[in-house]
Image (cartoon, rainbow, N blue to C red; front, top):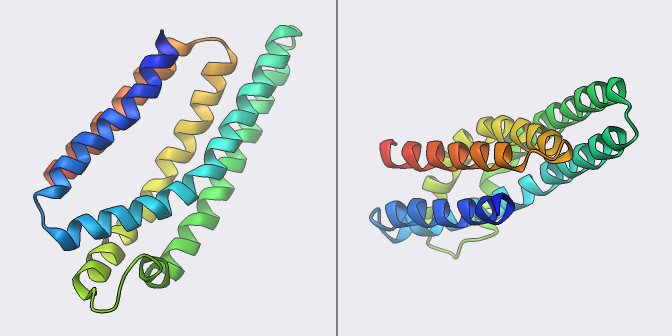
Length: 165
């Protein structure tokens, strides 16, 4: 049940975010969709690292090797941090070409909004990196309600910031 609710949190949260973006006009909608595609690409390795942490933790939990769990989590979070540095730097360096991949000629407003959005999002990828890592740990420990709680908090904070900003 907790896993199903967790899976539902992200799409429902994105629905609220999209409804807020939709009031901002066509250029903002197009920029948000372009940045969402960049985000999807950026988040995939973070999620893979989180899944690796989950597998490692679950295997060592099953084997009763608690000391390895701590080391594995620490190593996984270091990988998340290293990946964040890489994806943040890459996004900041290539923000305009990335947005232009999803634009048509004459999409000046969309490109400006998208580049501005990526300038901000590049730094916020740190939160998703650590969230994926920590959720991998809790999933590996069999604490799915904890991951549901954190997913709900994360998407709620994102929705609130979209409304405020």
